[in-house]
Length: 256
Image (cartoon, rainbow, N blue to C red; front, side, top):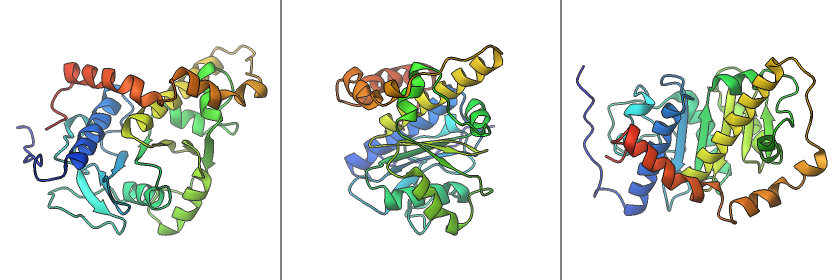
């Protein structure tokens, strides 16, 4: 089957929006590269720079490795497409992302995955356990949201926003993982951390031995430690350029 051809939007949108599109398309392809995708059934969104009620999200039906900057769909908080696209928007994706973008104006990006290890831990009553160095950074800013079925109901939005609070990480019980970030890069790096924590936990539990928990006193210092190891810039600023270089080598074309 011939590849899907999407006309380029470069030059028809602002430079700030184009950069947001490139970063968001890169995040979709990196999710595919890291094998966190669930065919076409999860979603990442980015606020359109300079707006509070518009965001970009994936064209429902494209595989994540097919998504380009120009194929992303611009929608408003009412779910209306603001430009012509042959693709629909995932209704569950719209519910989750519109709820968070409406309330968390600091969250330029919202990233949600159905990764296998993430869902496995989301089904555990104890949730994330303090078993690794990685876990302390997640547990320092983590909320939980109980499963209410596929996210199609408007009345779930207030509870979703309440359970996220001011946190970076949200575990959707029996469902998956969600992160927010002030940039696409920060949201992606937070998801890399979140999924790593869940993978380590599942493997540690599979070993069958007694597990050693990190002290709560150490967890309490995680925020300051994070500032130190990222030089105060946040994780995205350090790792994102290298991730884009990897993507250009292995899955080029996202910036079309």
